[in-house]
Length: 294
Image (cartoon, rainbow, N blue to C red; front, side, top):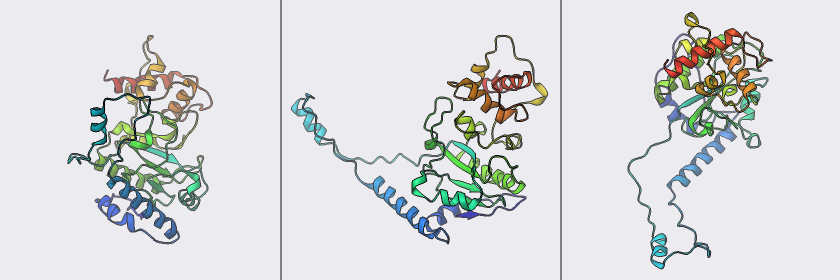
């Protein structure tokens, strides 16, 4: 489903419309794959509604008293009244690294690619909603943020039509901000949980790249940014690796974590080296202090 945001202001209440229309979207040229989507959703609903299977017979090497076996065989389904859908708590931003929006949408509708996202934004600012927000997209891959390693299960993935080297367009960023505002409000996502694919997969991914306007997003409440008017030289006992780890970076490959940090927060610096400059160290310490409440 494609959403068109106005350039100057966000459209309120879009998510009600999305939930109502998502299952019935069948416009060409994706009518066939939209039908597959609907079939897979129906299969998921059937799976959720089905009673859980009885425990398998005990292995002969396992010794249980006969009364305990009887209890195990008599497990009944008792549906609790206290549950809800799993809500996303992170937004991961990507660039498509492809040549066109048509190529990207085609990629996301091919079963063999095994990749997807929840939203795609083309260069004109058109927003395509391609997966219900409550469902698990395959966009993060092998990734880690802090102690979290299954990022797909807790996040919304947004792909922006960009080959990785071109500047982002004004309509893209304007409508991205509208979309992020809706997501943040709807799911109560913390400001610091808007991050990039390159942040959660250092050494493997670089998107959304050095051209992405993280500072502009942070000023609107989406992501962390440093206070330029209060930068200072870190104390002698400050360990940059600890600083990266506090922010959430996977430091098992420290050089790549440093590059990922610089790509996000100091994009004008040399991205080919993992060396700290006085400026990037002061930025790291500023963010570390903010995150640590110092």
